Length: 254
Ligand code: C2E
Ligand code: CA
Ligand code: CA
Image 1 (cartoon, protein in one colour):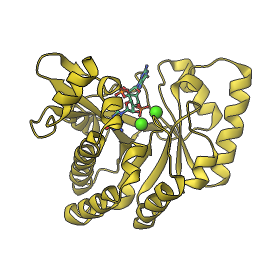
Image 2 (cartoon, helix red, strand yellow):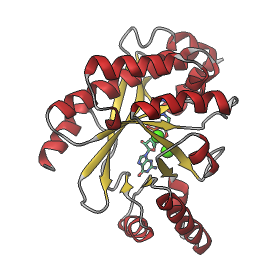
Image 3 (tube, helix red, strand yellow):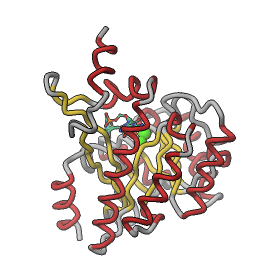
């Protein structure tokens, strides 16, 4: 019932300006500087208030709405990347891409159009493939991502350690980054730690960068540093925030 209501209201939400993006910093663990920013979608619902993605992204993925939302978030990410690049800031902007978006050539055309129009360096954009729903036609999705990789964009496999994600996706989707899910980052188990050591080694041997997600404590930060992760993201280092707040953070960390 609620889902039907939200789906109806989600239609046109982009046009009505109700969707916004939050920006969460990612830190380079060698330099402690901000190396990247992930854009995260929020819906400012006129009656229900601020809705987080879990409340509406699955609804969007089950309908055609994810294409429109995905386009909006790509616009937001590329606008921010263009602005930061123009002011000489070296931050890579990441945007979440649903497997559903990879079922259409539109995403390829849209990214090419944005990169050309905004004159942005394509390697300043990372597409995070979030396997919240399975990739049904892996070959077609891989073909589209290959075009974007050739253009110079970065491809990241999100949420490693959950659901459908696996190391085989790195090769299959020609990825150059792996994001370790917070459930593994938070684990104290010796078995998980040994597994992650192998994962980081596997990735680095292939020139793939590793990002640790959901870092909330100093202990977790120390652990992911010891593991050799390249970057970290999490509430300890910076929560998702407005573009204005992220701009201030970038200036103060210069
Ligand atoms: P994700 O891609 O794994 O994004 C990271 C999520 O973890 C974000 O939740 C972020 O707020 C949260 N997070 C970051 N650091 C910490 C931490 O230290 N502790 C904890 N407990 N959480 C942390 P958020 O914004 O609610 O997004 C949830 C998921 O929704 C995202 O997970 C992503 O899968 C999806 N999502 C968000 N924006 C978009 C979008 O524009 N398009 C698509 N397709 N999916 C999106
Ligand atoms: Ca993500
Ligand atoms: Ca993730």
